[in-house]
Image (tube, rainbow, N blue to C red; front, side, top):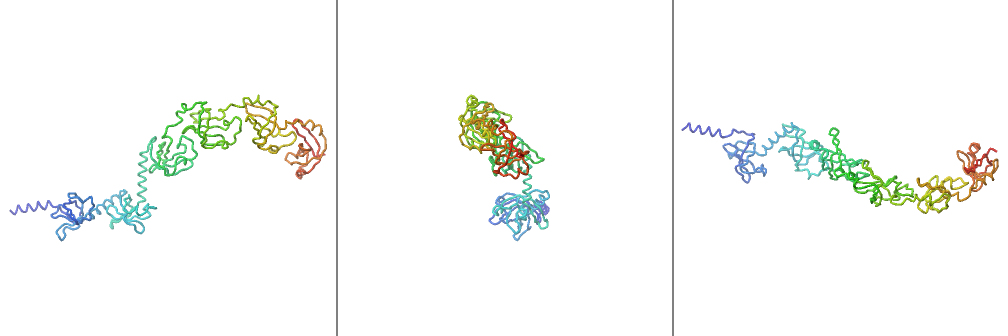
Length: 513
């Protein structure tokens, strides 16, 4: 009988785990009471744990959970267990391992303290210095009790304390995300991105950790003056990867490449001679760009604006947004150029110019503009002719045509020549009067001495007025340099005629008498 009893005791003892205080064991929840939970850990008596140490997810009869043995036996003869201490002990072991491996840990700031935050990481309280928090500009309500990733930067095994860094975790997360993006990026594929910065030459797009350049030429099939016409900072856009260089970290992106190239089918859309309407989208000194359809623009060169008018500033005739009808002159698909014309829509008045304005014809016109060498006169057919400065007066030296004519003035002129091919009409004002130089030559023969009034002093001589509307030139070699420098306009000087050129309409003088 005694033998049987001893065998039963031995079997009972073998069925009971050998446990000791401070040990972490696995137990099964057998009963849930209002303030405590009973747990079977395989010992002769059940263990008791305060219900406050459980999370809602762990409170389930039959569920196995790990506990730390706080005491083998309390006053009621039960094992005292701790769920929180087991979590902390296991958390510490895991923290030590993750710290050694350089892995990130998850935790939550639970309190703002001087110099930083107290952070709960796997049941262990750590310290997050403000300098390592990366929470600049973030309110406390968006920080406390919110979960973040941290990197363990310092650990104290004796005190079981640790210092963590959010800043280094953020950096590592960025590097991980960046590596993943580089692995995922493929040329020709589309990816979402956010406009991060804009420059004159393009925009930088954040692809989620990797920045790419969207060059201005890859934004639109249409010409644009600045990237801000297409994108703004903060815009969410989808772009295509055009090129990758991981070594330099450069990514080239395209926006227009996501859409068909409108120039591919250009031959079927437009042909030479086609009359088409478009919108003025850009005005430059050399011409006007017209948008014929989205992504396709043509140029009206200044020479193709009018048959009759000189166009020095297209901005005086056009405004951005104007609708104009044009004619297609040429198409260069490879160069992506279309030449347009406005004047080809009208008949060419120069074809009949020679027959309409025979040389010697006296006609009237309006002074339209000036250059240093002449005045432009608009004729009744909208054609334009020019009076050269040398054809304004037979006898008077004219420094500038505005000394004789005014803009808008109506004048009578004589047609001197017509060049339809080069679209030029030469006009004369002085030719309305007979050439007086034969008479002048007779009136002022060589060696004639006379008093003349100083008009101006130049490097090549002194101009003097011989009579109204008649000037002569004292050559620089025919007057003392110092004496010439002392002369003033309006003074009189004695001169002698040494040359009369009827063909060139000039009188040469000397002061050396």
